[in-house]
Length: 637
Image (cartoon, rainbow, N blue to C red; front, side, top):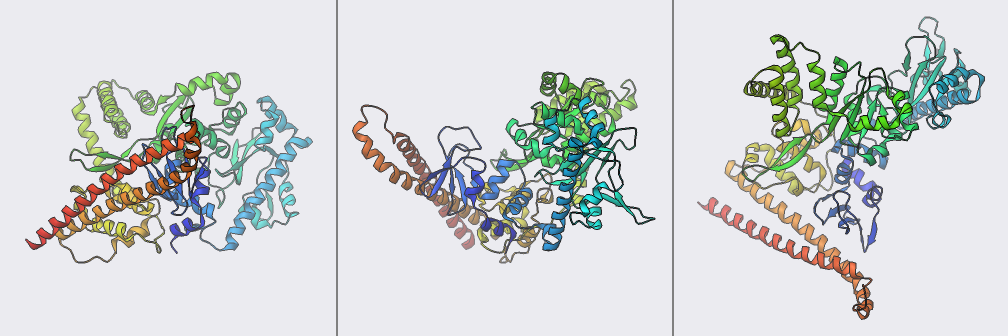
């Protein structure tokens, strides 16, 4: 059974959608105010029998459970598949392993959880943790924060934690794999990894214990020590406090990234809950992807002393490159719908006062912190300031190097107005005319495109085996065999594809600048391979063109018929529900508002939409008939 279909069969779309928006029963369907546009009257409907949803309001969007989660969370198909598969209790990709291995990882997480409890008890209730308590008090840390984040203390002992966990049935090899103890290679003895340190339990974005950060309370080096890389702990893919911050990030529409544990804790302690920590390193691509699923706005809190250094600028570029673009539709000059990448994510840089870290600022003046966040510079402005400060612009050679660096930032902009603005600014800064800079920018783009094509990444993915949509797959197979047809008028849009996996492939085909593989890293490689190898009848260019025109018309017809069926379904239910209310309320109509008036208004609205759909459907039938007659003439001619 295909993984996509298996996930759909195990999940109920009503349960999934109701976790995001409150649904009201409406006959055999459910309705709500659409979460994707502003409205007062509910126009968003979920159809349990079909396991689909559709908005009959201004956004007109719809699809299956994957399409809903992708749009609501702002994530790609692969991430939606991972999350829904996990919710359905289905292993995916490398997670399709035996039960024994899954049980082993669960035990490793449990061992870390027991370790966190052990350290926390020593911190809050033992004389051993006095030094750590004094340190936290000196930093102004509230007891409630210590408890909420389960901070702890690892004693100056070689075997305190190891002995505690062995008493609870854990084996040495498990504790080594969990990163809690180490083995001396010479003697073979086992000893605790963390000793005499303030302990920060680290959880993944779902709140599961995966490791620790540990701060020395004296002059010991390193100052901070983390759990080792393991099956549980990967520092590049974790953001500290994200499990606590995710709801606030979604609610406020912005994530603020600081560097240290104490910075994040100070923010949460003072009611600033949209803050996460990168644990002392520059942001990685995986960390950005975690945030991008929750918000399109990221603010980086940067140390004034580090502004402009290589590590800081690399971290910013990671944010820009990782998920700073998504596919949007636009009309070309010939009227065709074209899909391009759009910079939907906004990255801003907040430069802190010199000598101050977020922890100090928040504790001294939380209002100042808010002002700094609001005044954060657009990242392009920040990059201009930082890079300009690194070069001697009086030197022609230095100006050339500065121009090369800044053109990367300008080239990342999608908005032509913004790009023109920064090109003018760059031209003035380096004393070079704009035309020269534009030519160099085009050359850099060509070089970048060749590099992206050379990478050619493809991930293992599910291949639909049941309930395949042969009409959609035939259309995609024709396009894959005849890519030149994409440049011709065909009026085919992503919304014509009802299955999410086929819609994703179409988006990949129509993204001309970056190519198919850039958009199919979501785990659709196997599905793409099936489409490419699909058996098709022998067709020359003319027959392929006519076949595409026919299948596009049929997709349009099917889509409108489905919308009309949904409208009719709701219309009948609304009529049944309104009939009795109307009969009871009619006698009171002249004296005041009728209790069923809202339903009647909705009924009238549905009738009007139904008439509009009828007209559109008639137009599609006529166009299909014309294309059929044209094809017959061509074949006879």
